[in-house]
Image (tube, rainbow, N blue to C red; front, top):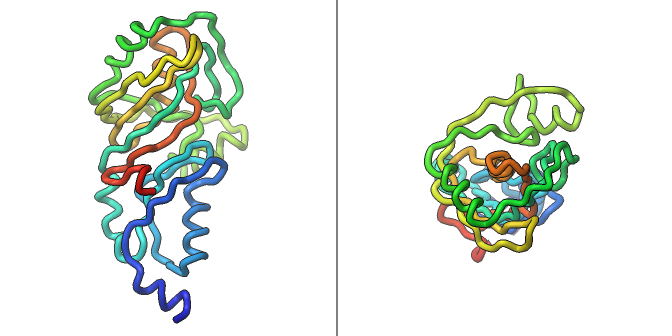
Amino acid sequence: MTTNELSEDIHGWLLIDKPMGIGSTKVVSIIRRITGIRKIGHGGTLDPDATGVLALALGEATKTVPVLGDTLKTYRFTLRLGIATDTDDSSGNTINKSSIRPETKDIKKTIEKLRGHILQLPPKLSALKINGKRAYKLFHQGLDYELSPRKIYVKDISILQRKNINEVAMEFTCGKGGYVRSLARDIGELLGCFGHAHGIRRIASGPFNIEKS
């Protein structure tokens, strides 16, 4: 039996623990080449600097992709205080600094304001389209552009550990369209100290989790 003959009988979800340094589109290309499956969709992208659950729909399972797109996703990341970057994560260039380091209790009070339905401004380095072009491509071309705030749902946000005076380990569960980098930026701004995200890792995407990837 050839790879193409085998691929015609493969239908379902394949969970990938995506490593850093490779984008979701590249992962799809690799799986397509290995399996010979032409119809592959995904339940939400991860950019190259993020790791974790990337759920791929194979064959007839692609018909269920819209259902997964509306489910909750959970991320873990480190909030780095005192520095704002142009990408809202640690891959970017520093654009603002502060010597202020809020206490953990103040961070807990602040994140309570970000639960529920909120307006969030997507990061510059997002996959959203502006006049037909991806925002991250415009960013890398050095072009100036504006993104509009979008309404998202934040189910939960919590502090896992205060690592040190500069870093806070956090967990974030949100609905469609939520960005960890924007969340880190907004927390920093609300605290008056600036902030950005580091080590973004998706641990759950709808019914799928990292343990099964």
